[in-house]
Length: 189
Image (cartoon, one colour):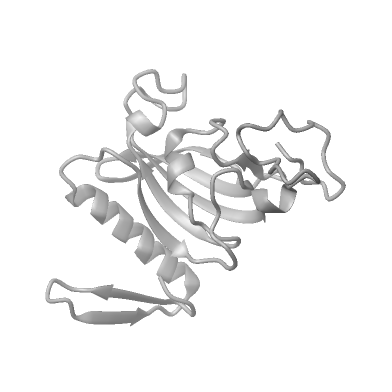
């Protein structure tokens, strides 16, 4: 994925190709289909498969960074996007999460590493990295592979949250952060 609705790839002969799409939506839809094709052509999905849809700007996120994300989740059915089981895209609240805190599925923890603010990514998550054999009652059947489109809207780097003694508030060894939202409305949890 390149700026200005371009995508670049190599073919089997290591020849470089670029495609320019007429709109951002067309470029994003194409990249999402590339991710689905990668999944369908792999013998077994044993980790998260991801494809950037839009690169975003700034530094890539790491464990300990806090994010606000918009997302849509689909069941992976009939080798493609099935039923939507969850989304916050048309809701007022973004999902807040801290990478590495274990509060979201393992597929998100791994699949979102390196994303940048404003970036969008397609994640295909195998059952073992999602909800496994138990699923989610009424929404995600047991042993479901899931597809997510995630967009990072805000980022708070763990390095920016360091306290006066030089210890990073974002590190796993530190005491639990205060549940009180910070002044900018972006809480540390």
